[in-house]
Length: 292
Image 1: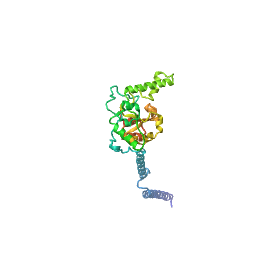
Image 2 (image 1 turned 90 degrees about the vertical axis):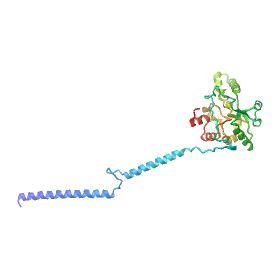
Image 3 (image 1 turned 135 degrees about the vertical axis):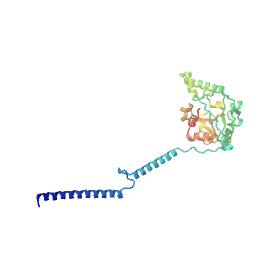
């Protein structure tokens, strides 16, 4: 074989080898592609991210959000459905939410006598009010009477001690309390004595007693809290639309010391809701969004 023939044979061999390498590479690529097509889940995209898993993950996330929403909505109990009728057929929806306190005095033209009636003496245990005639809002009286009658039926001696008070009567009580504060602490200025007195006896024009919607029961004394009357009121007053107006824990809001004997009519269903929420009247009106 000549030198030229040998060179041509080498070239042909190199071309053949190169061709075989290319064919083998192509076959290998086809095999890899086929294998991926067979064994890769349908949801896998070109970048290798599993859209099926991503979809399930997204669904799981949505489910968790729905579950969280359900749990969130269940974290606070829904407002109960209260009846329209109370004891003795009383209208459970009738309410009186007038706010009267140190920051919300009655208007100067408020008619103190507009809607009052005289409480029968057998429901009073304060001899002074028996003499002058204890009064209460005439629309509230059916609720108060039903409550006292129910207490009597249960063997509890519940009576009205101090109901409606006129402006002049409240002024006398307040002035007396101011004098008492100054006598107990002579260092107090007049303004300081009045501020201290106002936590015990409301300033005239700022007392709920002016409205005929509130009353003290049995006595105006801390000892009331140790009586069967107090226990009965705590368990049953809301059924007749009354709430204990001033508690120790709410004093920063009401500005009045704890008075276990002072109850305010707000309406049966309002009373139940206020007690359920643990709110005083100031908080409840804000909760309702009412402009007091």
